[in-house]
Image (cartoon, rainbow over the protein chains, first blue to last red):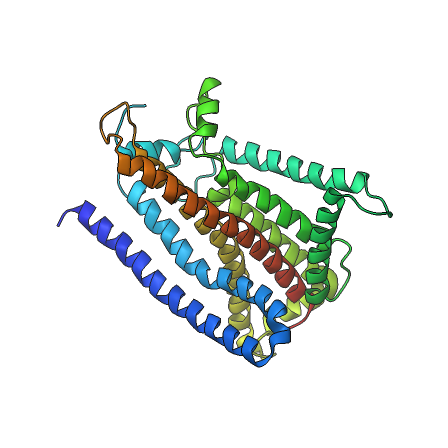
Length: 80
Length: 273
């Protein structure tokens, strides 16, 4: 396998594993939000603000990984 | 603009800087485009808020004053619920962070080739207009937040109290635990700063790169390397539209997260452990 192949595999693994964690995290948080809004509909608005904030935090590590994978794909600092 | 897809993307990813960056930490590199665009967005943000404040009336407000008032009220409510202390500096700081980061992120919504094309008329051949997609820009903002965390920690607790907490939280006040407490506190500060900056950087860099890739769908039609196809043109329109609409949400959400985390970190430095 060439170096280019290894870099492509690495980018795929970074994005794949990150997406795995981020999606499961958002799914669990979303399901708790839906449960809570079914139990207490008056809290829907306050919880919605906090839910968006948490969504951004959960996606953070995944998007940092996407940024690094894109950097390896297009502007690889270890080559040349 | 001859070349392949990779060259197109690499051309767009090159900064207008003093020297080419050779290592991860290189202090001789100064990215002019990041500096100019972030200062320009700051001036725009201050002008927008000032123009609303200048014409503010206590009677029936106009639409512009209403919009700015809603924004200020939202930020003020968040600050009131998170920071328990003197908010006369912190709430406007949060408002500035929100509006400034929103404007800087919104540069990503301008078509990808427009600003570099205008730059090439003036002889600027490499232009990366998005300041927050540069790691320097995002980490700069979060280093500012780090300095504020330390400043408020020392101001609220005093130098003696701040040092005491640095060495005794969270495990307790035993002399054998002082190195571990200190190490954990240092790691906590570094993790907060780095995660704050890199979250914004990762979101904006990935968004910008996706715009480049969508732009490549049409290809450089007069070079024949990639060629323009019907699929490409229609695909670029729809993919670009969908990603553009989603990116508006990301722009606002990341600015909101930056503001909330600034408030949360400064609020945490007000309280003890």
